[in-house]
Length: 73
Image (cartoon, rainbow, N blue to C red; front, side, top):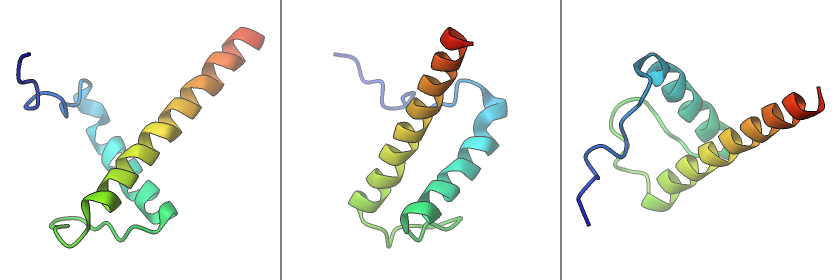
């Protein structure tokens, strides 16, 4: 198995980087994780994982909604 960890967090559309950063802070605020710009070493891995997992959940929900509208519209 090859080591792909160096590219697994790569943003494929560089123009989306700022939007993803903003989305991350919005999600963290929504779920009560005190994420701040800069150093966040005081957060647990569970808190960080929850932010990432919730981001993915919300992105999947948005995509499903778009697909349903496309199919039904």
